[in-house]
Image (cartoon, rainbow, N blue to C red; front, side):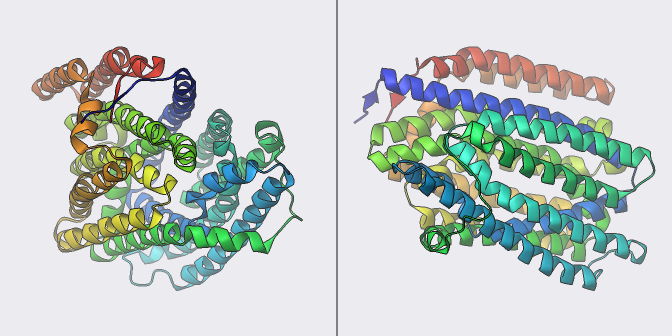
Length: 509
């Protein structure tokens, strides 16, 4: 039997707040996408393909060290919300300070192992001997980026727990602007990829400083103290985060193995192709994350209060919003992939088009799977979510392994896409539906409601772009795709996003 849940006044306020946070996340996201894509276009024109591949290879491996947060980033919002409910505000400050110091110490461990790794380069990887010294330096600098990123998690999660996504994005916009300015200046002055790594470190350190300085004004009664460390607070947190840590460890091992296989079985050129092709899909993943992570505090509160109706409402609305927002990027990005790569990075990276298409298609499943994963985390089903994610990584490697040696970056991307589609749609989303007592059929009905006209527009736009692709220069095709995306978002905004924001959408559970 279908249970039709009408919005209450309080629910409208809560979900308007959620949409407000999503809007701020997307403002910051769109700005960072522009910065990132523009900077990438500048970098690939000022360094060789091998140098860019080396930069992407080393920094991607080093970024995997973020697994050293021991899964705390996945449960801190819930812990902060619970701690803030206690009458003594010092309990919250003690928790923030303890986690901050613990993550800083774990970052130091990451730097130690990175120094050892840098000493053995090039090791088994196909790194040209002339670039081995550069690779070692970048490895150490990239590890220092992780060193300052980890403690920032403790602060950013506090902002999120109090729905201050606006402040987080304002800080990110500022540091991104400084990063692109310094990067362009460094390359224009003749410095190479080592300077780019140093700029990342400066930007990350500034972000940490701004998060710390802005904390008291953004989070009521919150204070950071470098002297306030309570080891006993970490024990229950680590107990709660053990499955989240296993999930993060799986991410680390997958990234490590994927890049290792690419760097060993293929070449630095294939690493450059994959790194460039993954830029747009990676930004799309970030867009999904930014849209979905604002729902976590609401989901956590609904779960803690046993409010199934509110839990269902938040989950359904998040799914609906994300799918409609992501769709034009995936479809139009795939249709215009070849001219986009030619305009963005020139013909030397032409092989990246097919890789990008595979990765974009996999992003559709991430849009469905991310909010499902958030729901399971909010409801304490971390073990289930972790098992599903680990199987996705295992399946990705199993499928990609025989393909990498023959097809290089395309083989890796095809394996990842196949595993993501199978696991996220076939398992993760179904698990979230079962736990929230929503049938997959009703989920699909709710997500597709209001999308008829936007889909017609998107189909017509894709057909037009495909038909003119052989008659127009790449730059005009890209401009047409961008204009088409704006038209779709306008229609989608009127037919779907605005009714969702105003609380006029009927919830089907």
